[in-house]
Amino acid sequence: MKAKYGNWSNAEVNVTVTDICPNCGRGIEPVLKDSSFYKDENSHILFLTLFCNSCKYAWVDSYDYIYDYGDVFPRNLHYYKEVPSKFPKEISKLSPQGVKTYVQSLQAEADGYDTLVGIGLRKSLEFIIKDFLIYKFPEKADEIKAKLLGAVIKDYIDDQILQKLAQATSWIGNDETHYVRKHTDKDLQDLKKFLNATIRFIEYQLTILDAQNLVDQI
Image (cartoon, rainbow, N blue to C red; front, side, top):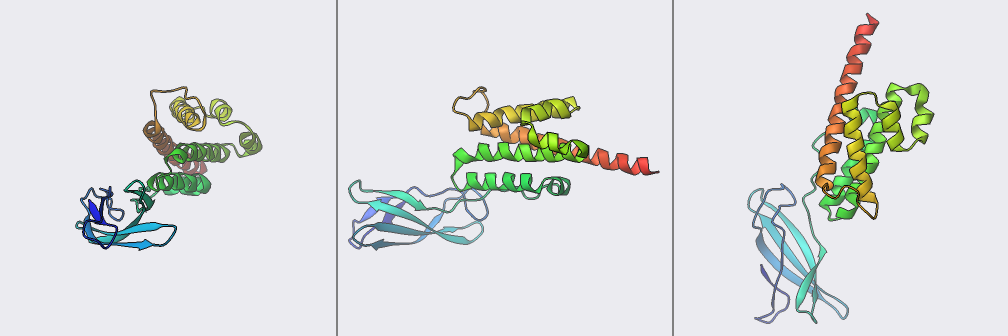
């Protein structure tokens, strides 16, 4: 859209604005309610007040206007933060640090820090896997904490489905942290998919263990 960056009549500049409401997450064509600017000797900042007709939410995004280029560059933009609505209570209780890291990783993605997302999800996987195995084998807690994740997955996960899910997630997560990718046909979306499946499978296993404990008590 066009926005004014000065007081004279033809002082307009093209600005690329979001098409996702930062409040409700719906795809929109935001309405420009107001445009204002701040100028001093060192900076020229353009402020846009935008409005979502869907949820009736307004927000202010700001841009640096660079006179030499006749263009604007994002300064402080609002994004929709896609975070999981609610983690399974079993996983939240099992691995609070793993869940916290997972949520913060998605928040980093929503805030535009896309290069950090895979690193955070890989860390989340390690906490959730190790916390689950420590829960199953408390007598081996020190060994599980000290070993590399790949060895932990191989040595302590006896369920073949969970082992393969965890391995695949770990491999793609490692690609997100290394200079050279080994699995070039997989990306961040695959990492999310495999990690979410791993989490669901661990939730399933926790439910089984809970049922077994109940039956064994009788």
